[in-house]
Amino acid sequence: MTGEVDLLPLCPFPPLPWWGAICDKAARLDGLEHYQKRSFRNRYCVMQSDGLMQLTVPVERRGGRPRPQDETRRVMGDTDRKAWQAVRTAYGRAPYFEEMADGLEALFLRGPETLGGWNRATVAWAAEWMGMSVPGDVQAEEYHVVDHGVRMLQWQDGAAHGLVRWPHVWEDRHRAIPFERLGILDALLHVGPAAVELVSPVPPSGSPHLR
Image (cartoon, rainbow, N blue to C red; front, side):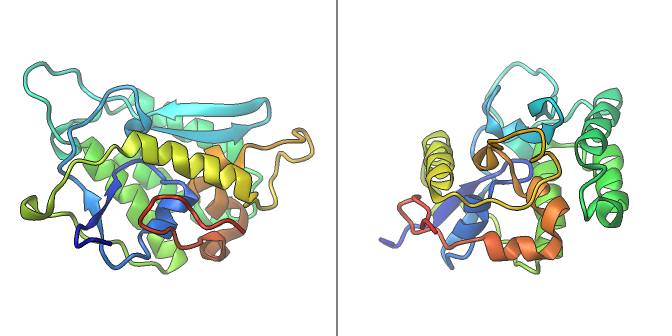
């Protein structure tokens, strides 16, 4: 590091490399970044019987100045119920689904009203199950612009080459499950708290250590 904090994007159920990056003592959550539409910041993937499915956290359309996620309100109601049903359909047979279902249902149906709040809640949920600590937010005086989109692509590419995988309920139907596209939600529902053992430290360059 060169004295700069390592900024991590707010996103729902972050991928495994994101969790590796929070092991850096200089890591901070980037709550100051302006929300960008149609990006990973309000999208995540689940694996269903017919393949990969991308879920979107819909947000209110508001004109005017760009705003951070904590000022971006979610569209709540029917979309939350549909997303929860999609997760139930995808993972109802997963080993840890029943154990985790109540907390997840509350998160989906009664979660925070802003996108930033909801993303933080998904991080807090996963961190509690894995026994990990979540870094605090970056302060204005520490802030610097980071291209989180490029870093996310680096993480996915590195994870794909690192071949980090876990037992999966749909492996009997799909020969090649895209684990690099699946976030911590998928890993936790399949291996429970042991998902923390899948996390490898990520150096400041953003490229994950490969296994």
